[in-house]
Amino acid sequence: MAPEVAAGKPYDATVDRKDAIDKRLSGEPLPIPVETSEAMAQVILKACAFNPKDRYQSPSEFKEALAAVKAGLPVTAFVPTADNTFNELVSAESVS
Image (tube, rainbow, N blue to C red):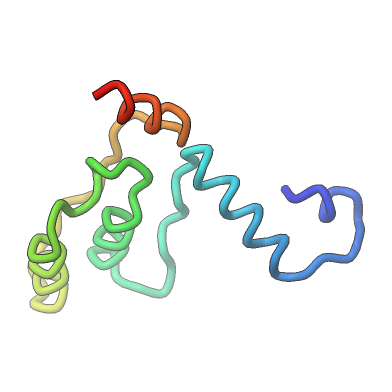
């Protein structure tokens, strides 16, 4: 929660964005998207995965998943790897 909200002070949309950015950088999982099919929700979660290795590895792979949703075909459920934080991912990349 943003400090402004916790303190009961007035706030605007930028506070919500800051809170969202802080959550993403900490590796907190995204909520399941609403107002869409379960299959599309899985595609969105994979496309927005925190760990790059969990995301679609190419535009064509992403396109295939979207085409499967459109055609009503089953889509593999998204299962993220162990939660990572931004700092852990950056450290792992710099060591590689």
